[in-house]
Amino acid sequence: MTRLNLTRPAVGCADYPALAERLKFLSNDAGEIAIPTRNRPKQAEQLIGGGLYFIIKHMLMGRVEILRFDDRPDGRIDIVCRLPLQRVRATPKRAHQGWRYLSACDAPPVIAEGDMGDEFPPQLLKELSALMLI
Image (cartoon, rainbow, N blue to C red; front, side):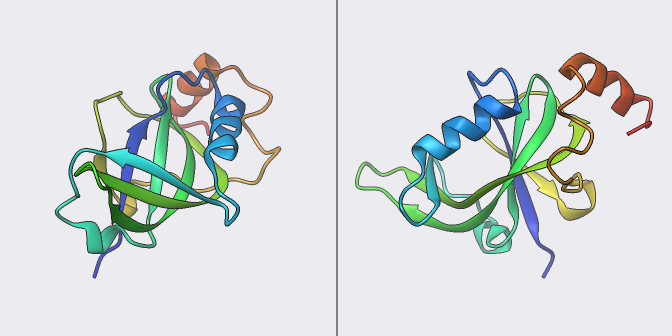
């Protein structure tokens, strides 16, 4: 079975540190976050163990691991993920509403904190990535 991932815009986050702070604030004592969505993905079983990749300013910037999907009393679904947020190689990605599938072969690799990313502004990261220099 091929593992899938999801992409989701990080609405209101200006940069990676803002996203990290938001997710830390939303996490419970077990280091889990619940991200509400309207519909359960049809391929939910393939997403368990995959990643939820966040789009900031038209770039994939961070990832958390998907643990499970929980039903909510209001009929919506929680995408339950585990922290820590991992920085990924900045990769251009158009923003969209809700979530979209991302295959494992199209997912950007995780990079270590302090490697490429902290030093460069988002626009420069976008241009370097488009030129396939990072």
